[in-house]
Image (cartoon, rainbow, N blue to C red; front, side, top):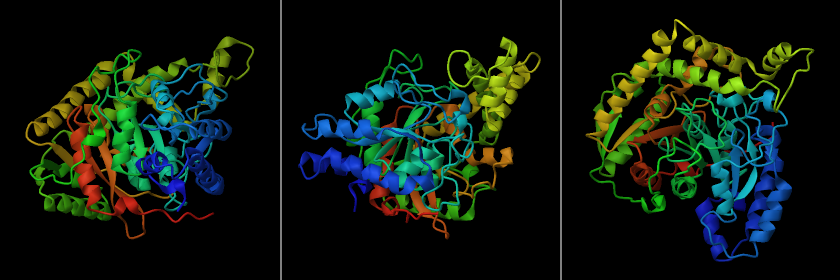
Length: 484
């Protein structure tokens, strides 16, 4: 077994005992990347020379920080000073930010090792990592299938042992859905728990940075490091960050869990439903009290999201004009430069969402669409609040299906949008949620279980997820990597 196959907490234990060095771990990670990433395409930028230089310095030191010497991959929409940051879009080609995102600053302070930038759907607009200007990422479990999106590169890198930890972003399920499809753990924390400063905005009221890891313990360790208040982010919440690694308990007797009927209806694949129902049985066997409930406004979540998210995106993406940075179409006059830069620089899905969002915000339609969607968003949040007044957690499938074939849905936006139907409500309500592996389809593709908690109660999520993980072996299974 290569060191790259271990979890962060296993590596930290070995470094502490001086059984391995962080340089050895880093070299194993890059060996794995060199061997398999030409087929998977999880990375769009690698920082090998700098990573090995940092590892060489750290091998002479005794670890003092919780992620010291651990290789971490970062999604390509998170700014890292003087490193390419393109959102996998042609319009940001050549852009290197002059500053670090707050989470990058926290990683540097913890002495984690930056591996590189991971592939994603362009500007995070997608559920399959097929809209990237760098080409699609492939699922390590089956190279003919998608890894999920938009953080597909981060999820695939963790699944293929091409990194130890990875950072993603989640606007409508973009961490949890690819984690489910790649058989890893994906955590979207409460809105405001992690600073968004330096995250290139998609939909500012929905975006959240989160983690992709190999197990629940790593997720808790990682969140403890990167969470916390940041004065650079007006949506950051000034609350103390607990040590999430102390949340673990095998005993969950008496934990009250709600299972919403709406998340198991038509459109949910039978194999997905069966795996999640078996997971619920495992938790019931451990003493949790699982009961069916109703979330009546769930059916409106997808429609609300595809009004609000494109509306915010159309506003956020107005800044990309080819004048200050990134791609520029050279024309004789300023207006043609603007038009052609955006026409040539943005991909098809980005253009579609800009048009949708601009329409929803336009005169005469703002109240009919955007304002009404905001009111329904409040009703969706109220549904969750009522459930959490009586229950500790909510359990659902993460994705309605396992990974589908590359190209299968790319020309049908509605089918693609439905891939996030089970994760979107969590973002609309600003809740924390995690996806953990809970089974496999007959064809060997992973299935994810989503665990949702009330705001800032990530400890309850870790408690439940850890108990489930310790009583199953789904997270221990690895894809058999092959060359195409």
